[in-house]
Image (cartoon, helix red, strand yellow):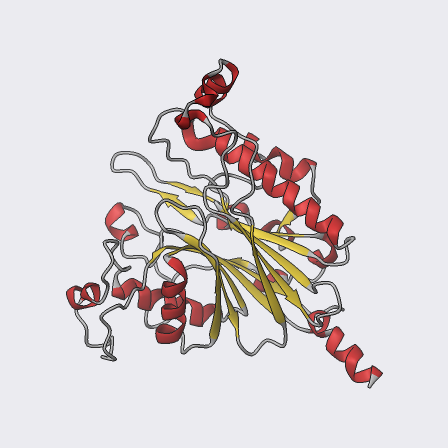
Length: 350
């Protein structure tokens, strides 16, 4: 029936969709020794004993609070950073979110086992493809590695590398209304190089992060070309730097030079002071609040951004009261994650 098929094909345009980007900070939920016992009565020590991994589970209270925050936000799609593998994502959804979300995860390049993943409401009327770019070269070497190549030492096993890859990955979720049509929406999730520089060769991780961002933008434009602009592409994740206007860090120049994407919080008119997603708290210095987490929207759906329901979520307690912004490290440790999630609500097509 042509009319029925047309209605199905317009499901994305007719649907209100809430997408949340969320760095859940070391979400390990490994239950190797779980024998069906209720988590409600477990002590923290008993909770940790359920895992056979050398990496500890995320504290049980924080896992519960993450689930409560997700219930309060009520997202259709969660774009998650720092997930401890597919098993953790599946367990989190099954035991703490009433199995209302289907997990989508491909293990990335992280040396800490923190991956990118999606949780998608099972009730959505779409089908999905999940694609990883973890094997893509980012066309980047550190200066000493480049020197090894240029001076003829590249024959050594330790110097054979011609480029690094993404620190974690770029994980695509392609959302389809029909198998014989282009995606109705494409999500690109990334967790760029952190500002840690243990080797002291790249202060603040800027050069590596710049290379990852430029490759991310290149992939974005490749996908856009592949579908001839028919599939809107939304990019989000933990960018580990200031990527927002009016004064983005220099490593994010390509984002504005080579794409037309806009921060959803800017589109929604969220006040700059309310956009921070992470707090750097020091013992003897003033805390620094920064926006590290983003959801960038393309022009095709910018007009559908709901200004009243697009914001940075602040954690609430059991009574639904907004928790205070931490003033010291002890208060920060009480939060379920060291990042606040970004909420984007897309209205139906006018």
